[in-house]
Amino acid sequence: MAKQGPSASTHILLSRAQFDATMEAVEAHQRAQGLRPGKLGGRPSPGVVVVRNDTAVDVGARGVLGIGAVLIEPHDDEDGFTARVLLSGSTPDPELHTGKFVVLLEPLAPTDLGRTVIHGLVQVQVKMIDEAHGYADVADADTAKLESGGTGSARLLWVQAVGDRTDPEVAWCVARLGGDRIMPLAYKTVTDESAGEIDVKRVNADGTTTGETETWQVFPE
Image (cartoon, rainbow, N blue to C red; front, side):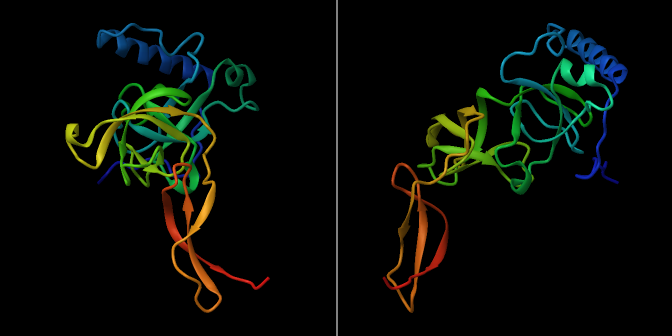
């Protein structure tokens, strides 16, 4: 039977003592792997937060998790809550996590904690729906990569050339996370008016169209 992760309605919190014990275990693991310990303690780097993998699967470095609840709530431990931001990471769901996700800096097994990027520059894989897209956001149930779009909270600053990719549809990218979700500038008609209705699509800043076709009613002046 597959291991079950916590449900979306489950809040698994940590006490300060549990967190301190977890940090000690993580740092011991880092030393065993030849890494410099202490990266999860002390003052956090700008744009880097500690997240626990609350999915039922291993998530690799540069993988993606949706942002869930905090792990230490202020009414339980105000000092622990204010000491640093600790978040639960869940399987990406566009309805819940569009613009609310992190990219892992190290692999995390279920229930493991580790460093992730929530804001700033990071390398991440992106499924390129359209090579003209300049943005990306979470893809449904995909912890391995983002999905490109005409809008999104991740700005794609560099995209791997198609000929250099292992999978032509999936590119390594340098993305800037944490920006406001860029919205289209306008709508463009894609069919002529018929029976008082007209089909339109959203227009990106570069003039390309994106998203599903929408049908609008046309009212006489």
